[in-house]
Every structure is written in structure tokens, then in C-alpha cells.
Image (cartoon, rainbow, N blue to C red; front, side):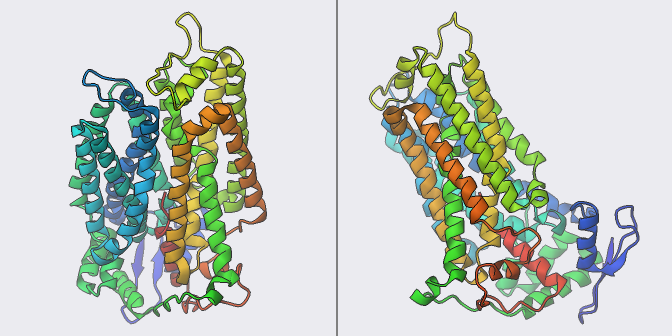
Length: 548
């Protein structure tokens, strides 16, 4: 593909001389859009963009570390709840804090990372969060007491909060156009892979060995971070035009696209600045503000109260309760299912649309939660009451459940429970997982996007913390099957919410989406001069604000 764009602003032309291009000669971005529609979203790729693709893949080591932090809790808690030769162990109350404190301190990471990445840059911020991870794993590896252990987990939580804030922005700003729309899902895939790695090694290593593996992954990520460039858009924002030019040339192909890169810099510098947001009672009461805020807040609440973190953080306990002799294998299958399904359904949201994907995901999760609860209820009626209470009761802190007796085969209900859990992860991956973060960049208006994203991610973290922290207590209070039936009810409400309240945003520009909430056009942006390049830039900005 060859393109020629003059610095004076002449029309750019794409010359496709390959089977995909079919020798089309049309304006640059119109060419990309047409090719995208004709080939189901596949745009002709250029090997000159290989550095950008490699940078994206290297940065994805950070969300892999974040996923490892999430997945670490389930296998590590099992060994930490058993007293070792040094007498260092966790009781049930401490174990619940061990899992949930990550989400609590992640709020600090979200708040601290926003000004950090604006002042120091995306690359430096990623380096800082990786070192926070490293210090966290060092504390965990060296811990001889519960306090030091929790300090390490808290630092990992801060790193997690920074990751879900900074990395998606960086990915959206450096990603090539033909993969930019899938970067939000790519971020989730990397996190799912991190959970899978934690579950996999958890079958062979104790909590300290797992911490050493987590620290090794962080060291690899830090080394790779030296290779990636700074975001060119952040450099332009800081007035470093030469640095932005070098970054663009590194990412998108050197001298061949030099005129196009310079044109993009000129357009960025000449773009009108968004008016600053002014908070007032009047602005808060406008549908333009409160409607999208309510939608994203509800969506982020539903994401966790449908039970995803209960399964991820307590997978070993759940499958032990279900009657599996070896709970590591089903837990590994859960992590594998999430990663594989996300990989093969990256474009499903674009094909079905946001609304249909969210409805299908919520309804499927509701059925799976109800089935899992029914299986646990059936097994509780077959003399598994002692195992259930020992595994989830807050009083029996040091209990270790053996599951089934050596001469008993794994019950059929246990296999049904495993199947429903795997389907849960699959349905979650096609809607509730990626769309919640995609909505941050699409539904929130430009002038309120900063505060709106902060509110939504804060609600996300608080919801995750409440689910993780209360799961053991509620399991002892109303039994595990009662908890999953509650999750099923919430999932049904999520389905109704998606049907009645969630707007379809597929194929719409950001300005068109804003108009859905306010007939009287809010003074959000002056970038209403419709050019295909502006639409492409807005699409990039929307994707850059998605996160996990």
C-alpha cells in the first residue's frame, strides 16, 4: 500500500496493488473503510507497521502480570490456609482479605496513574507500575508474617489499578488502524492469559514459588519496556514535535510515510481544543451527563455482581466443594476457556453489535449461574454438608476439605458444575467482559469522559472488592448454591438492562452517540467538521480509553 499526502493538506490516495486492495484509488481513510466493509473488517496490512505491532505485544506483558495477580489468589490461598512448618498461615477471614485487598488498593492505582501518565508520559508510567509490581512480589516472597504479605498484595493491587488505566490508553495511541478496534479485547485476552498462567503453575507450586514466577514475568516486562517508544500523541501534547515525529517514524514506517506522518502532526496541532468541563447542578441534571454516566456505572456493577470474581478468586474452593478430587485441573480449564474464547470472539462484538452481545452474554451467564447453583444444591443434599461448611465457614479457619472419599468417583453433578462454569466464562468473554470497558470510550461524552471514566472504574473496583470479600461470608450464611442463585438473579437484571437501557453504538461516530442522550447538542466538541480522518481520530480516542 502506498499513500501520498502533501504537507499543504492535499488529498491522500491509497493505492492497493494486492488481492485485498483490488487496485482501488480512493481517499486514504475512505479506502480503509471500504476495504473493511468488503472484507468483514480485514484491512490490508503493511509490514512497515511491524514495529507498532511488536510494541503492542510487548506492552501486553503488563496486563499479563495483572492477570497473574488476579489468578494468584486462588491457588495461593489453598497453601496459605494450611499451616506450614514455620507456623505461618491464614485463617478464613485473612484469606478473604488476601484476595480482595487487590481490588481495594487498585482504586489508589487508578487515581494516581491518571496525573502520572499526563505529566511523565505513557511509557514512564508503564515502567513505574511494573516496578510497583516488582516490589509487591518481592514483599510476598520475603514475607514471614501476614502484615508483610498484605503489603505485597496491596502493592500488586496498586500496580493493577495503574495497568487498567495506563496500558489501554497507550495501546490505543500506538496501535495500527487495522487492529485498533480490537485492542480492548486484546487487553482482556492478555489478562485472561495471565490468569491461566497462574492457575497452571498453581498446580505445581506453593504460594512462594508462584510469587517468584510472578516476579520473573515482571522482570521480563521491564526489560521489554525499554524497547517500546513513547506515545507520539503524548509528545505532541507536550509540544515535542520532533520526538513525536521520531516515534511515528519508528511505529509506522520511516521515510516512506514521512509526508503522511507530518500531515497527521499538522492536523493534530490545528485541531480545536475541547472546552474545559465546568461542574454545576445544571450540568449534572442534563440527560447528556447523567444518562451515559448511569449506563456505564450500572454496566460496571453488573460486570462483577454476576459472579466473575467469585469464580476466578475462589475457583479451587468451588470445585473442591463440587466434589473434584483434584481441583487444579478444572480451575486450569476455567482459565483456558476464558483466554481461548476471547481470542476467537474478538470480532463478535462488531458483528453482532454491542446491545445483542451484551444481552446474549448476560442471559447465558444467568443460566450458567443457576445451573451451577443447582448442582451445588443437589450435592449438598447428598451428605456434603460438612464439606461445604468446612470449606466456606468463617469459623473453621484451618479446615482442609478433602472433597470426596478416595473410593468415590467424581459425581455427575460435579461435571455438570464444571461445564456450567466453563460456559459462564465463555458467555462472559463475549459481552460483559469487553463491552463494559468499551463503553467508557464510546458512550461517555468527550467533555465528561475524564470524570465519567474515574467514576465508572471506581465503581468497578468497589464492586469487585465487595464480591470477593463477601463471598465466603455469604456462602456460610446462605450456602454456596444460594450465592450463585443470587448471581443468576443479578444476571437476569443485567439482561433486562441491556435490552431496555443500553444503546446500540456499532457504526456510529462519537458525536452521533452523544446525540442519543441529548437532542439539544451539548457543547462537547467542535470537531463536527465531518471528515473521514476526524472520524478515524475519534474512533482511536474511544478505543484508547477502554480498559479491564
